[in-house]
Length: 410
Image 1: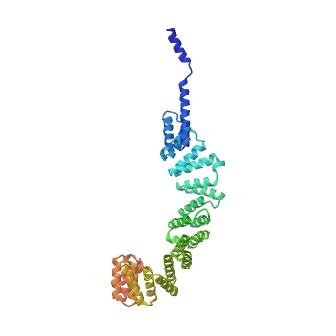
Image 2: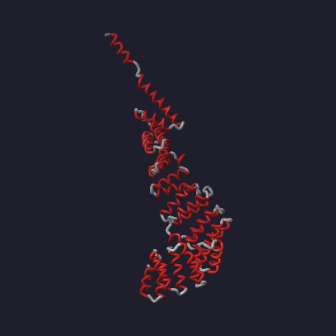
Image 3: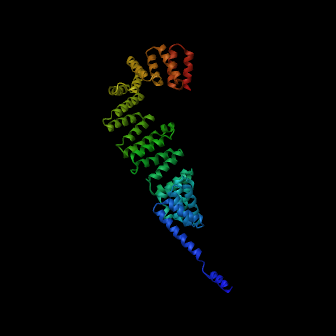
């Protein structure tokens, strides 16, 4: 009996070895997991760390490395959860917060990213109160639709680095959303003048930004718009795509002399490219037609037809120009017939043909052509309706003429 009591006493007085052994084991497994993570074996690291977490060893460090491993595996949601837990256990740890910010960015959690970045700036201004991080924070707030705070941080970045592409890009976008076109052209112009971005990127940027601007606004702001294109071209004078874009913008906003000048520059840059020479020469003819310069218009169209007698678009435009001028109508009719043979249901070609017939005094035939145009959707085209009304008026069908003229005025 005494021996049994003594045994119990000895066991009771022995130090608790098992918990210490467990802690040593946990520490060893944790270090193994960190080593696996360092080698890029995210699956093995995550498995080992998860076993520690599920076993009750969910320290902030375990949560942090488990979050890192999950992010490495592409498991963004679980990575976010574990990193948020690490931050909750140590809210002042900027490593944890910075990593969590990266995971928020991976998951496009913009408001969470913005608030985390703002927290980092407040906690450690020596490292995070700098232009790049200001721009990142501003972009996150912008994506989260908090325009005011987005502008605040982007402007902080630009105050330090006025030509920072990332900040200029997002600042221009916010100005465009707010319909602050003066601001947009300022920021976008500075962005396009930087040499850090290549010409292809700038061309795509211009196309995407200007597609968001209403046509009426483009007309109002055509001066700054053309200047924006010129700023990109000035940095990349040999880039054909930027010249093509500038030329198309000039034509859309009806700056025809600028469109012609760019078309000639494109021809010079394209060398022996016959297709480019043909298309740009046609555009020059179209621009002169819009300007009312018949002589230069016809000369340009003649050049195109020497290069390609079957250029259907030029045949149509040349024929219509001749009809407007009342010159060489027989030739105009032949050219127009050729276009209809190629595309008999084309509204534009039908309108040209009918109008030439009208100018030749062949109004009965012209009426048949315009009735056909109505079948193919001519009621939606004001010019075609107006031309049809003129033909009907010439035939003495005044009431019907007034009806189609009223449709064209709607």
